[in-house]
Amino acid sequence: MAVNAPSRLAPTALAPTLSFGSGLLRGLALLATLICAAPALAVIGLALRPEANATTIGAALLRDGAIGTLALMLTGGGAAIAFGAVAAWLVSLCAFPGRGLFTWMLVLPMAAPSFVLAYAYSGMTWGGAAPVPVAGFWGAAFVYAIGLYPYVYLAARAAFMSQSACALEAARTLGAKAGDVFWRVGLPLARPGIAAGGALALMEIAADYGAAQHFGLTTLSTAIFRAWYAHASPHLALQISAALLIAALFFLTIERRARGRAAFAGGSTRWRSLPRYDLNPAARWAASLFCLALVALGALLPLGWLARLAVLHGNISDLARPFANSVLLAGAGALIALALASIVAAAARKGGALGQASLLAAGAGYAAPGAVIAMGALAVFGFAREAGFVGGLGAGLALTALLWTYAARFAAAGVQPIDAGLSRLSKGVDASARVLGASVWRRLLRIDLPIAAPSLVASALILFVEILKELPATLILRPFDFDTLAVQAYAYASDERLLEAAAPSLMIFVAGLAPILVLSSGIARARAGAR
Image (cartoon, rainbow, N blue to C red; front, side, top):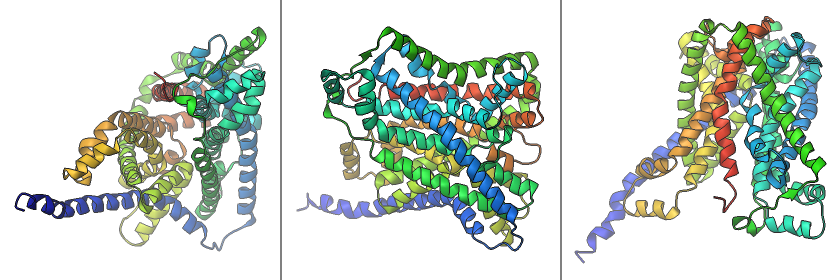
């Protein structure tokens, strides 16, 4: 009996430690949920307040913004979905010249924000190099189509790579041509992935401000700034923000449902390679030209033009301070967002209602545009000021609000890589550590996070680049005379100084290439059984 006493006492001795660790994780998960959800809740709450000075201007601005946003989503978003789905099918299941090169080159336009592409094509048009003017509504639709198709391409390519080889080979055996297999077999099986990527592209269009403003269009994002600055109506800006937030949540729901249904394919994917279709000579070269056109229009042409202008007219000394500010904000914001993402991923892995709530709050922040989250952060600081907790929004509080906005906006972007890394952890290892008396935090710090370390590095890099590209939130919350590369490029372009805007735009473009290429390489190895 004396020998067995320690084993009977061990669970009792460990109970306080386990309870403390679990309670601390729940507390941090609740805090992360509040940090991510507070700006969105503040926007909706303030937008529902009655406004005594409401006029028909607000209704007209909201109507025009909704119509403009919807039209751009239908044209630019529809083209991006078509381009991305066709490109994914070609590089995944067809053989044509340059396929291996296009596999990773097709993601290059994802590194450039839409406003950078807009500035590049405006410069080419105004300089006389482009034969067709890129301006107005169709110019914006073109920029969105060539800049956002990689969202659909990556999701569709992952869906095509996970499809059953048996289903595709059966269609070939029955005499179906490559086009028939695409429409009748491949496309229906990949539809959830295409819908998920399409929802992301549509959310990006709804959230974009720089390109729409540059082309002089009225969208929901530009309407927020017009309501605030041109009409001096913060409440109207909040109402438009609430409408945009609800629309973003709608597309987020579509994306989540599509992703939840995406895992259906035959069981042969683990052991058998996907068949590649030998196209006829004309189709092979048409496929090569199609992919080359997407890469050239979305990356090579604007990148080359920006590089040329940066060499001829760029003044690097003027960019030293914006560059330092960008690195400082992106680094600090990425660390905060990474900490939130790690807590949310750990809570989601533990399960329960709080874990799901944390995921939903983080997803809502990512779905909402930066301008909306910035408006919510300002609203929360307004509440704090009315309560006497803070004074005016000085430089320190403005930077705090900006970092909070970055964290709430991009935490979800870091959750997915971390969750993927934690999914490699064997349940047996975690159970063994728990039996040996390791607390929740000891298991997290000594087992879970070291295993997920590569994913943490990838997540931090992605967060850094996402924050580096953020424009509307930085425009709203930055302290006076505190410019970033994105703000500097926007300021030059707003003054029609596109030659000077080339250098900061180019620096943003180049900074986003590395994580995008890493992401593309990971998808290439994502098929089960691949080496």
